[in-house]
Length: 103
Image (cartoon, rainbow, N blue to C red; front, side):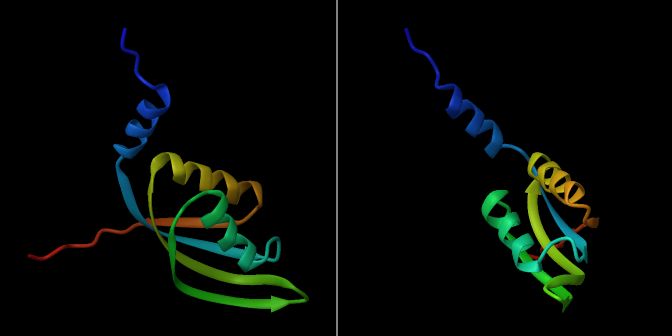
């Protein structure tokens, strides 16, 4: 009898999820340090990102300002990121990024 590995099936399904290119703007309001936020997004949530712009000021060790990130994520990863930002009371807005590729 041949059985399939359920972990492999989940991995295959996850690989087939469509990804979207998004620009995410996060407002830093002193609740979390900028470096900690970037570390968490990459290391804990596993989301690769590029910082497009950052206007961050440090006051008594707290980060204030805005950060724009370019991310390429599937809907499940984005929901985890959105939950994390809401849980930590960080305001965010998202713009879907569409890049035309010319041949």
